[in-house]
Length: 250
Image 1 (tube, rainbow, N blue to C red):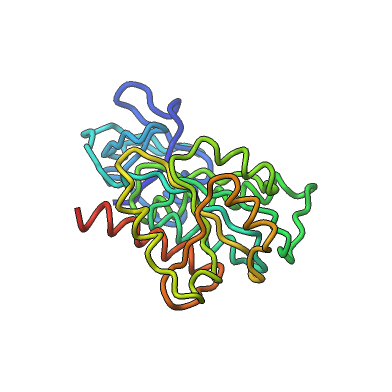
Image 2 (cartoon, rainbow, N blue to C red):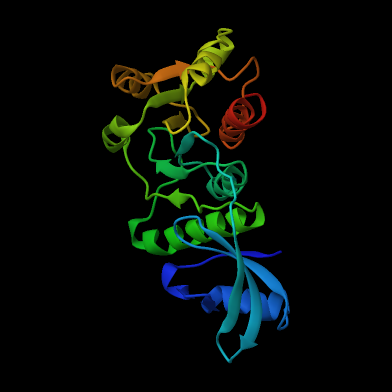
C-alpha cells in the first residue's frame, strides 16, 4: 500500500482528509479509486490503514480501518552532518540516507566546500530537500520523516553537538593509517535510545584545523575500513553499519 505522511489536523476521529501534493499523487499519479487502501502516518509516527471513500475537486477522504503497530526506526537516532558537496550529491545523501534510517541531516559549511550556499534561495532549497526526505520515507515505509536542517558553520556544529551521546568524524586519514577499531568499538558502546552525530567532510575532506576543533570538543575521528569512500558514500556506509549492529545482529 502507498504511504503518506500527514499532519495531525488531517485526522478527525476515524476520518482522514488529504489535499495538496498528496492529493495530486493519489489522483493523478496513482490514479486510485474509492475502495482502495493507503497507509497514513501522523506526526508522532502512528500509522493507520485508510480506505478511500470520497473524492472532491481538491481533496481525498477516507476512513481508518485499523491502526498498525510498526517498528521501522533504528533504535539509535543517527544524525548525518554533510560538508556541503557539489552538484546534487546532498540530495542523494538525503534520499538514500532516509531509506537507510537516518533521523536527521545537517548540511555543514566546511572550509573546503566548493559550493556556496545562497541565503536568498534557502527557503526554496530547504523545501526541496525536505520533500526529498518525505518521499524517500514514504517509499521505504518509515514511520518518521527525517528533519533536514539549514546549513551551519563549524562553531554552530560544535554547539549543536552538545546534546548528542556520541560524536564521530569520518576521517579518511585515519583509514589511510589502517585505523579500523574506533567505529566498531563505539557501536558496541551505544544503546537504544541514544543519539549519534557523525560528521563527513566535502569532496576535499576536512582541514586539520576543523579536525582539531572537533576533537577538542569531544568528537572521535575514526576510519571506515581500508577503502577511501566518497563524500556521498560514507554516510550510507555508517547508516548500514548502525542498522546491522542494532537491527540484525542483536
